[in-house]
Length: 154
Image 1 (cartoon, rainbow, N blue to C red):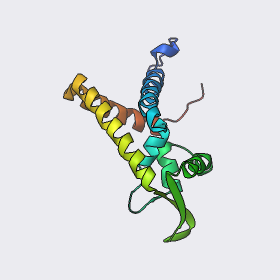
Image 2 (tube, rainbow, N blue to C red):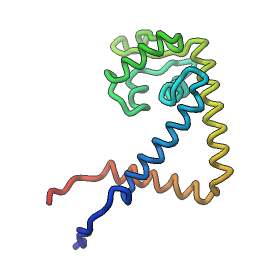
Image 3 (tube, one colour):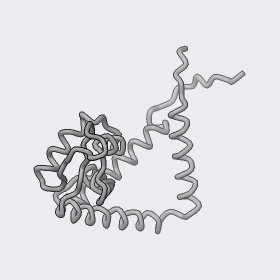
Image 4 (spheres, one colour):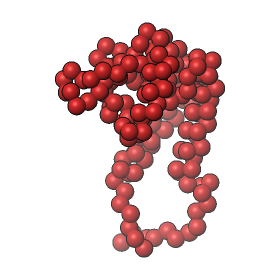
């Protein structure tokens, strides 16, 4: 029978607190780095993940960003106005829409990719391969545990 741990945990000691703080710090740094390109971290991430030749469905893009398709709509409209993407009905499935990069979108994506590579090279220079593998494996495990977690009412 599992032993219950009833001790009080401060929010600064929880795993999710550190994940949120670190991600927020990284996202803020990315936003500072890509601001000169006229985009944000989330726009750069989306551009990087749009298939350059085949396009990407709105639902795939929403899934990548952890959003509902309806929530992504405003962002896509903004990207269209900026001239970074265009949308077309999916030829294979007329019920869905695909997102494609414009020439400007391809250029902004190239710039965003460069920032991601430089930043990750910097991290790799300061984090050992062992620590990196351990972190990645731990994050994968956290993701699995989170997906498996079922709330047990007290």
